[in-house]
Length: 365
Image (cartoon, rainbow, N blue to C red; front, side, top):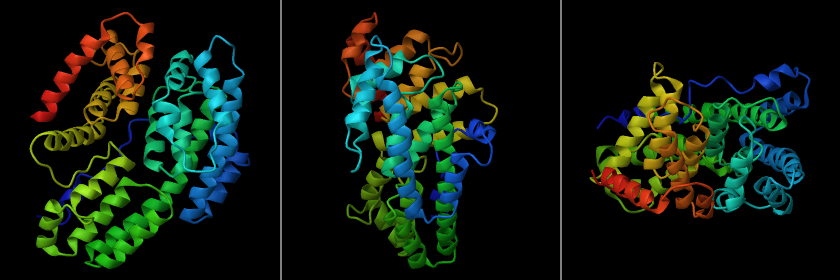
């Protein structure tokens, strides 16, 4: 096995076909508070960057958006409820993003209540991920929302600023990661491992860095070490590493090994995701459709739900509007939110069972 083969599959799972989201911030001039904050980030260490981003996310962006959401008209019950949730939450500790948003009916109700292009509610979990140091998941959501043309409104400004701030920090992390890879390629595995451990110790969660840590650790033992890592059930084995990697980024496109069944299906789905993202000729509407279906297959239900919901207005893309809506509600059901189904017509339990069977067949192949 070539030592570099697994890394060939690597791709930070983004949408390269989306224009950079910083245009709104750039238009405000280089002396804006956003640019001044960006300069602070550029001059800081990785640990300092994580803390600065947490402070900005919680005390600036989320605070402002929470206050704005809590003051909308009474008829927007989900938006108001999310505003109050933000105001009443204790963000001094690690944030349970899933409990506050993905498993919260008010969050999805608020998402549905917002006008197209206004991501007042949808940007909230991305900012929470950012505050937690979950940079992969934050960046994915920033990119996803930006792909659907945010309008000229305060949430769009925060979306652009957050994306630009995060890009500055990821640049430093990537530079350090590439330095570790260079040492790995020279056979200096312990030095490479030390770099990856230092990055992760900063509190930043990066699937790429965690993968490289596993890969360098396995490579220390040569071919025997690689084989052992593939089959080991301990901390140095792929199974344990995979759990951490995919917790950091459920749609990370590299998978070191695969067994028959669900594991092999996931391996193929990650390859398909990478191929889709690399395909510059594929229309954007088709990319969104493929992205949503692959996120569904890989059980990243929050990402799939956002993609299905925001693509409802796209005529192209394969699936009918009714099918996309059903899959949106299916993803919500998988997140534990089922009471919103009553707002739509259809025998959703029956359709969910059919989709369950379809997905089970795919994962068993």
